[in-house]
Length: 614
Image 1 (cartoon, rainbow, N blue to C red):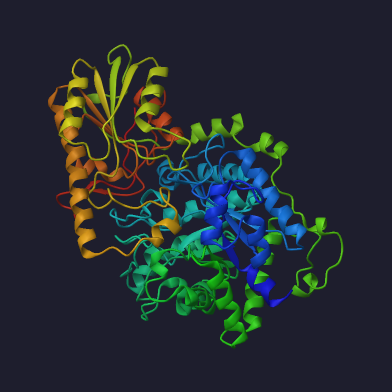
Image 2: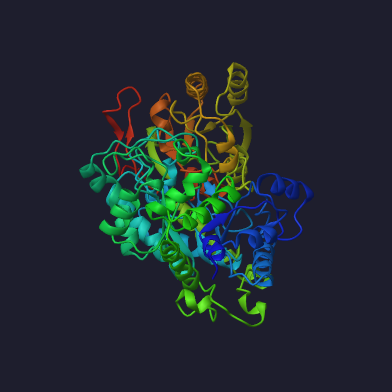
C-alpha cells in the first residue's frame, strides 16, 4: 500500500446523498461545497477512504432498501478503483440516538435497558440491531455508550447511559458487546475516559471532568474495563479534559497519557481507538483543524472520525509523515488494527493474509474486492421482521418504570376512566420516523379501549397553551401529561439526535450572553411544564405524568396522581407505557439512576432500584 492509501484507511467520513454515484442535485452541491467531491464514489477515490459513516441529516438513511443499495454502491465504487472494501458505520444506540428508523426495528435505549435490569434483554437488543445493520451493509456501530451518568444535568449523555451505578453499567455494556459480536458487527464503547459527570456538551464546548484518579477508577473505568474484557472491537474517545489523568489541558482525544498511557498500557486495549467526531467544538478549541488529526494519531488513536475539512486533515497527516513528526511505522500500526477489524467483520475474506505486505502489488479482477453489502433479499429476511418487532415490544414492556401511584389510580380502565386527554411535549423523532408522542400515546390508548384525545402543548407551554389544556381537560376522566426534560439544566440541551455534528460545530462558541439567554429559556421551560401540570391538577381531574426522556422530571413537577418514566419518546417505548397505564402489562422497570429532590439535591426522592408494580 502507498502512504496515501495507508493514511486513507484511518479516516471515516460522512458524505451527503442516498446514492453512491447519483445523489440528489442539492446533495451534490453540498458535497462540493463541504467536501470538494460530488458523491461517495469520488470521496473514496480521492482519499482512499477506509470508512464511511451514515447520518439521517446527510440523507443516507431514507429507508432500508435505499440504505442497502447505498452500501452496495459504496463497495462497488471501492472495487472499481481497486480500493479495499469500505467499513460502513453508524451511530445506532437506539432510544434517543437512532440514525436508521422505521420500518427497521427500533429498540429501547440504554437507560431503558438499564431499568429492565436484564442483561439478556440488552444482549438480545444488540443482536437484533446488529443483525439488521449487517443486512443493510453496515458493519460497525458506534455503540454501546459506556458512560456512567452521574450528573442529572448532563446535557449530552443522560438516557444514552445505562445508569449511574458503575458496576451495573459495566454489566450492560458487556452484554451489548456480546450481542453485537453475535451479529457480526464491530461495536465501540464510548466515550473514553468517561463523559458522564459534566454539565457541558462537547459538541459545543470543551468539558472538564474533575474526578480524582481514585474517583475515575471507581466511577468511570469499570464499564470500559468490562467492554475490553468482553472483547469490544473499538473504543471511542471523548473530547473532554480530565486533569487527574492528564494535567496538560488537552482533550482526551489528543492526550497521549490518556489514549496510550491509560487505555493502551493500563487497561491493555489493543483494538481500534476511534475519535469522536473531529467536527465537534470540544476538540477544536485549542488546536486548528490541520493539527487535530495529527495530534490524535500521536496520542495513539487509529480511526479519525468526521474531520470538518477532510482535505486539510488528510494532507496534514501525510505532511506529518514526510516531516518525520509521525513515522510510517506508526501509521502501519493503526492501519493493521483497522484492517484486523475489517477482517473480523468479514470485509476482507480472501483478500488479506494478516500483513500489510499481503495487500501490496495485488493483481486480479477488481470485483474480487467487492465485499458482501446489503441486498434486497437480506433486507427482507432481517430488517423489521415480525420476530424482531415482537421482541422489541417485549423488551420495552420490561422498562417502563412506575415511580408513584397515589390511591392506586393505575392501571386505568376504560370502564372507569374512558375519556383521556393526552397533553405535553412532542419532541422531534430521533430517527425522523416515529411520533409525535402525544398522538402515539393517544392512538395506543384508543386501541386499548379508551377514547383518547391528543393536544400537544410543547416543552415550554405558555399561558394560552395552558388555558387550552385546562379547557380540554374539563369533563375528561383522566389526563396524561408527557413531560420532556423539565429540569432547567437540560431543557435546552443540544442532542446528538437532533442535529448534525457538522451543523453544530460550524456555529460559534457560546458567549456568556448566550449562556444567560439559554438559562432564561430553560427556566421558562420548567415553569411552563410545571405550570401546566399544576393547572391540570387544579381541575380535579386525575393527572398521570409520563417522563418521556430523563426520569428526573418528577422532581420538578407538582405532585401528580401517578408518575412513570419511559426513558425515550420512540413509539416502541410509548406503546409499552400505554399498555402499562392500561393494565395490559405490569410495570417492571426499576430506576437505574437516583432521582434527587429539586429543592435539595442532597436528598434522594427515589433511589436506584425504585419501581412500583401492580
